[in-house]
Image 1: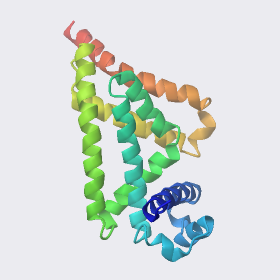
Image 2 (image 1 turned 90 degrees about the horizontal axis):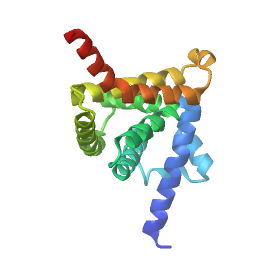
Image 3 (image 1 turned 180 degrees about the vertical axis):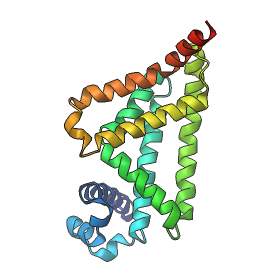
Image 4 (image 1 turned 90 degrees about the vertical axis):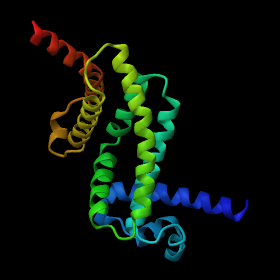
Length: 206
């Protein structure tokens, strides 16, 4: 195995362990010393892959976005399947969804030297949005809904983020019942949203 391959494989392992430690301990509890110890690596070796903890966080967020993009490319023929995948990706791991969103917002305000990584992140996200916008346009046309693409995308995002917040809440978890049935209820609500808009418009016109 050549050095470049070893470097890439070690980097993937670093990301996997870092994400696990971050989710287990939170932003303040995840340290580079703990990460190095978990991996049995010298701390200096970590700095061959990133320059700071904030840069590591950005790389984890980008890794997650890349995974979403690649999976969306594979599911671009079927809107229902893509929407289900997208929402379950967030709702099966709500703690990751909430934490990554919080970290991104913090780093966008206070992160130092991260502009290149934010540019990379936004490029990936724009690619994903282009696919998603095209799929939503085709879906709304297919079901003859007058709901706008912008409103539907905003509705999906709000529903998914709100569901992730609730699933991640220590208070609301005691009242949620079956998490699987709740996840499917949110997905069904997202799919039904354009029909609900159409139905309300018909009622108003009458």
